[in-house]
Every structure is written in structure tokens, then in C-alpha cells.
Amino acid sequence: MTEKLFTYEEFQSLIDSSYDGIHITDDKGVTRFYNRACEEIEGISKEDIIGRSVQEFVDSGIYPESITLEAIRQKKRVNMFQHINGKLVMASATPFYEGARMKGIIVNSRDITSLNTLQSDLEDAKRISRNYHMELEQMKYREIDSDLIARDPEMEKVIRMVMRVAPVKSSVLIQGEPGVGKSVIAHLLHSYSPVKDMPFMKLDCGAITEGLLEAELFGHEPSAFIGSGETVRKGVLELADGGTLFLDEIDALSISLQSKLLTVIQEGQFTRIGGGEKIPVDVRIIAATNKNLENLVKESGFREELYYRLSVIPINIPPLRKRRDDIYPLVMQNLKKVNGKYAMDTRIDPKAMDCLIGYHWPGNVRELENIVERLVVTTSDSVIDYEHIPFEIKNAQIESLSFMSVDDSYSLNDIMAHFEKQVLLNVMEVDEDVNSMAKKLKVDPTTIRRKFHKHGIKLK
Image (cartoon, rainbow, N blue to C red):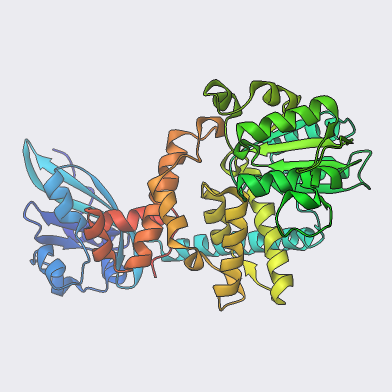
């Protein structure tokens, strides 16, 4: 006969001395054993809970949810973080069986409030460190005066090409989406050329009608227009003589004007409107477009000979969504400009910056400049927080994860984790109540708490 190691009273005393809470129920959830640690953790006395169903405590709101009932429902071990009696509790509920029949549930629980506080302190320390880093970055970018930012490897390639071709007189065709900075690149080409001290003239071909465009480009004699007076009007082509002529939106030129421009490039001379004299001109032409000129050539919308003359050196500027490393310094540069413009000292919170970096910027640099100015002038505080970011930017991150491309080497887990965190942040902005958030996302409140804990988001 096997000798018993402990009497029942000794066993109960031993379990009572355990640091972890031990709560045992039958298969219906009625409490049969409840040790001293459970009393301290949950704030419920043995007398009040022994013989009663845990469902009563859920219904009365003492338990926000019951891990015991969940283990009974699932018939397997369940782990959960719970907020009970003002504490963060880590609990594990395990069914035990007699043969094939579930006999009850044993729950082990531990108060991890102090551990969670330590984690929060560590997170706060990391956030403070990051803020200091951002402050240092802000100080560094206060010294930037140039309109050009090229921190991303893709943009660095563009700048290297610009530096290589700036000294030569060959025509350059700059291509890129609206707002990527084609004008900045054109100015850079001129600034590093041998004729940097000569005129730089720009003509936006898409901004004016064809009749006025021809006069702006070639100029006109006094007799060319009724009421024009007796003064010769020089066009930008003549004004740029010896320097650089930048033709933006070159695709807007009519076929007729394309032919005249081609003649200028081939012969190095032109005639003013209403005049007969051939005027020699020595000018480097830089053209820019946001259209695919090769396709326009195929569709007979652009002269093939002019296309080849202009694209001796093609430069393609990638959109901002493909040069993500440029977003941070661009935001900082424009923040500096707007602060100077309005005599302000507005800064940006790291979380808000992350949101801007994650946005796909369909309007490219121009859109970024507008957004930064809007944030500075509409934010009443001295710091731009996540809450100040326009809804369309935060919502775009939910609707599209295109910025996490395969080329960026993000794993599927990275992408899903980022998406999940953004969903939680956006839902919390609308309603901070856990039950309401759970209802909106069609999950139970326990899942909401677990997800918030996983992503390090503090419930308010």
C-alpha cells in the first residue's frame, strides 16, 4: 500500500503557499478550490467564491471575461491576459479529465503588473531616446538650404547622372510623375554647367494656349499683333541665348510647334513671329514631361525626330513612393521652411512621422510640401501628433500596403503586423472602449486586449 505524502490539510496549506494563483472548478464552472494567491490577485475571498459559478462573476462585471468558461467551451488549454482588480494578470486554464469525461478546470494565474510596468518604462525610455534622435536630426536639417533631397539610393543614382552630364551641352529629357521635382533637376543641371552664370529660362508649355505659346517661345515683331505697339518682343528662346532653356510639359506642344522647335535644334537659328530675319541662338535645351513620349510617338502625337533630339540624355525621376528614404528629410526640410515662413517652431512626433513615411504620396513632393504646410498652420500645439495627420493619409495606409513592396524585403509577417497595428490605431481613434472596438472588428474583447499588448499600444 502506497503511503500518502500529505494529508488534505497539508496539501491545501502547500497550495496556499504558492506564489501563483490556483483556481479549480468543476466541469460546469463552479469553484471547488481557490488559494490565497488568488484572493490577493483578484480581490475575492474564498468564502465569496467557493461553491459559486464563475459565470456569476462575469455577469456582475467582476470578471471582464472568464478563462475558465473559455476552456470549458474549447475543451483545451487556453492562455489569456486579463485585467482584474486593477491588475494585469497572465492566466492559463487547463481541463483535466477522468477517462473521457472532463472533470474540471484548473487555472494558474500570475500578477504581472510590475513586469508590464517595467516593459512600459522600457518602451518610454526607447521613445525618449528616439525623440532625442529625432531632435538631433531636426537640428541637422536646419542647416539645409538646398531644394534638393537625395538620401534614397534611387535618387542618388539620378543625382550622379546629373553631375555627370551637367558639364556637356547635350539635350536632356527629364521624365517623371507630376510633382517629383523635374524643375529642381533642371535647375541643378544648369547650376553645375559651364554656363551657370548665363540665363536660365523656363517655359511651361502646358500652361498657355498654342498662339501665346508660340509668341512666348519665339517672340514677335511689332507688326505681328494688332495693338502690340512698336516694340520687339523677345521670346524665351532668344532670352536664353548662351544659357539654358527649360521646356516643361513638352508634350503639350502642337505638332506645328514641335516642327519649328526641331528646326531650331537642327539649324541653331529661328525667326520671330511676323519677322523674316534669321536669328542665331546658342542654347542648351532641357525638356520635361510626365507623359510617355515613346507612346506618343507611336500614336503620332509627338514627332519622332524631335523626341530623339531631346532625349540624347534621358533622366527618369522615380516617384516618392519608390524613394522612401527621402521622405523623412523632405518632411524635415519643408518643416524648417514653413516654420521660417510663419515664424513658428513646430516639431513632429515620431508616430506622426511614421505615418507620413508609410503614405504612398500620389502627388509626390508637391503633395508632401502642401501637407507639411497644412499641418504646421492648422496644428494649435507645438508638436504635430498622429492625431493631427489628415484622415485620408491614415486611411490610405489601411486601404493599401503597396509601399511594402517585394523590393523592400518585407516579409508577409511584417506586412500583416503593420496592417494589424494600423487597424487597431484607427479603430481606437473612433472609440476607446474595448467592447465597442471588439464589436466593430467582430472579435471578442480578449482578442482586442491581446493584440494591443502584442503591438505595445496602451489602451487609454
